[in-house]
Length: 449
Image 1: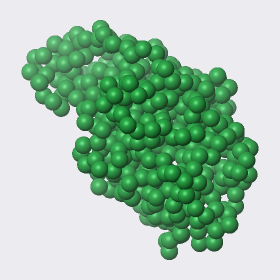
Image 2: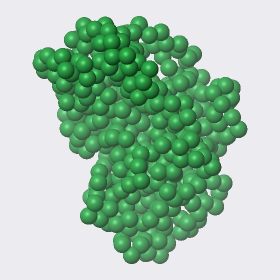
Image 3: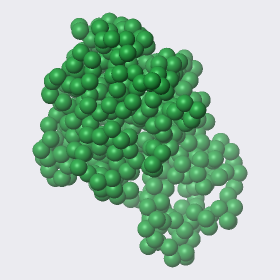
Image 4: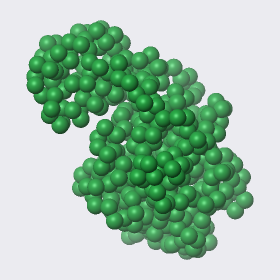
């Protein structure tokens, strides 16, 4: 089932005049949506036709995932044992048996460093490649927005899709650096939601209650006239909303879009391999979008970072409390199953070599276990996983000290992460100069070909 807000595409209800008037006032661009000319960039020069970013919002512990310290004291290493992998010298937590068996398909970076331990700021810095000096309201465009600007194409599917339970948030508000930033909201991703049952929802079209896609096409010119009559075309909020609507509208009425977002086309066995979780089904949806040649897909593990005792929100990775219980019962198995299925699926379909996959959060967590039985924020060193899209597999890049407090090799900073992604997506030095982004940054040495 393909849902759009509360709109279900298999139903045949009409739409009231009141509903038309409600959203007609915000659609100055809708009448021309099907005729808009898009200047497409040349084909990418890098190996990655698509980028798939798995955003582990909240900060996964490096010790409890990809950089365990089995020889450290108990209060640091924690209760988990480790597993050997197909990569010499690489051990991972016992929670990742599937990934351990597939380590010859990915590489691990163990020397990341962020500039702050504040979720909202660290998340913005990581996604936008900031260097720490950027003000909270003046972040550069996120990496997906840069790819979108360079790789805009004349197609029904948008170039940047975020599969997310909702806008990225903390207790202090919405994350500023998760979209177009100073480039504006026109470069924000098209957001879609995917449930653990595989139902897909497009919030930008939530007002279209009971309206079939076929009828949308018949009503475009009428809605454009209604919009002109309201004299609200110059309103900035209406213009922003209408741009989001236009992109989501093109997606909805296209056969390609409806196919890509219809998880019922997948077999029960395939859906089961990804796991019946929001993250698992979101990863399956992301694979379908990659298969449809969407240039950048971001899958957000959660909407909120918090996973507090007594206030667990939507189970982000901010495991100050009950870290090991949540890692054992939820986070570890879900990530192991979904990411392994994704790597298998991309490989089996011949897509892995041309799809860059990254799994990363905004920072790591304290090596020493807290009195609450959890780990707190730790930006000094943390880990990530990279696969496909020109990544040299079976490598470990960087090294932390014996207790995972700091890196003993040159740190990998957020601007290096974004620069590496851009290069692999075919946005080289000359393009970055033209776009005025990351003109002097460097790629992660030894990770990519």
